[in-house]
Image (cartoon, rainbow, N blue to C red; front, side):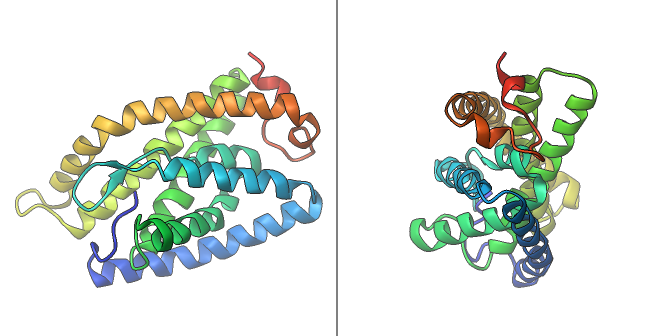
Length: 226
């Protein structure tokens, strides 16, 4: 995540940017529907954005041309669905590229796809599976957030491997190399992010019970009580 400015070949950067545009557009439409249905959702959307911004700003050096950090998007995906996270990730990544020199404008599309699309989709899918299997709400949330984190880095590793295949072994060899380096920092970060998400949800449920139990929410406050 946060593939740095100018690191990807031009054709790769352009392709990922084109792929990100419809994802952000669909996400904006999803957010508009959520706000129209529940105007008070603006507060939680702001919180989900801030949560993502803060966690992704905790940058740790990883593989050359990238960085390792929590992602924060799994939490928002559970609250509002995965589609809403694409525009949120776009805003977060744009501000970080301009203000913090994290990522870049040419790699913005690639970073949106990994952080705002792949991670939330994987996390939300696992969350729904956990609820279908009647897992405790807290465990479902923890697993969703951790998997969203790991899926983001899996896609980032694929993006880097596609751009820089190994002379011997090509894409698969490069993918194994990038995943091996990422795993050293990302596995413990994913576990930690899952724990933080559960704690944050419990705190929100305690102080904003009404906001978290509105119709359409994926997880009710009482389901994370234990």
